[in-house]
Image (cartoon, rainbow, N blue to C red; front, top):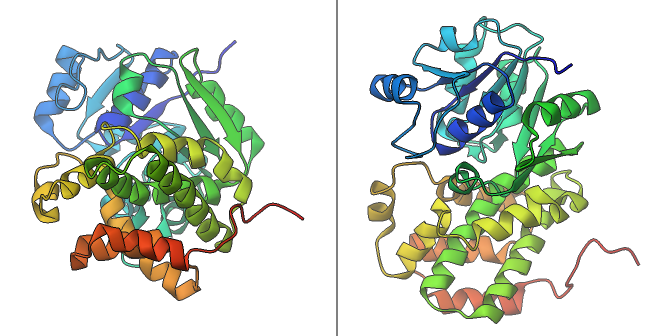
Length: 338
């Protein structure tokens, strides 16, 4: 018989809502925590998060609340889907509210500023007794809500944890795979946001398919180079959290970071683009942190440097490609033996 878990999901944006509902549809009671009283009332009465996922019916096993204490009471699995800028504050508030056996799972694809802390590192610092895992992959919430088949990878240091999360989330339309490279999976999910901005910019400027293919593969090479320098497994980037997420985020208008790039490529100022967005685009924050960290570590990242100069120093896009051709390493695939 299936073991029934008591689950909370913190963050009522599109992806947090989708994950909460997937779990509820699998037969587990879920509490969705968000800060907006009116939206909580609407979710509980109309069974819909109309602001982020209009028309997506929420299962009766899902309820919403604005009380963090209520949300996490007596749970055994907790998902965090809050923006990276508020991730530590929320994690800190959880101290004393959770059983030390409660499993923590980060859904947030970002990096904390200042510094260079991934969300799993924040959880380890703020809630060191609790086991943790991460989930990542090519997961556009709107497509999942519409019933499209999607896949994600769960990563932890425990096969038992990965199995638990597989059983909790897996369905015939949402497929779950496992990994032991938590750091690599999490880095892949965070870094691809930067390259999605560049891909959207290229789309707005009609780069062409050949150039887009060049950008995508050099982006994968660049992000995996950085991640391996930080201790990740390069093979992780051949999976869902690497090339899978990168491809989707760099080619879909449903991606917030991709839309930022498109708007900038059409001449819209960055500040104006960000002001008009209703959800956080993590790539903008990640770009600056990644550039500083790469320089500190001595990792060559011409695409990151070029995009930074485009956004912050009005550098012509054509110069980025000149740099990529003259300064990029000549090796095509860096982690092939022989």
